[in-house]
Image (cartoon, rainbow, N blue to C red):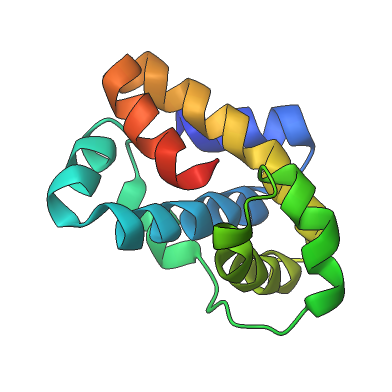
Amino acid sequence: MELIQQLTQTLGVQEDQAKGGAGLLFQMAQQKLGAEKFAQVSDCVPGMSDMLAAAPESGGGLAGAIGGLAGGLGGQAGNLGNVAELAGGFSKLGLNPGSMGQFVPIILNFVQNQGGEGVKDMLASVLS
């Protein structure tokens, strides 16, 4: 999967960490976008079902990590709950929760190259 290769090479993470991290972000997008819009994103990302399946159960009260993460994801107060949830999932993958902010631009760039500006903007609206 091309996206996973980009994540492992750019960020120096393991393949399972790249799959799980991308899966966590795509799960959040799926919840926020709804089925119809998310299908547009999913259609341009080969291996989407594998990534979604690789995402660990998030849920984690990593309150200490939230402060560092808020900056990485734009720091919007409305996203704080999502950030906390994602932080738990990233920690379960053995990743620093702050690395979430590094995954987002790589994923957005990939989606733009595969599906165009409109699909990228739709995904960016829920990830950044």
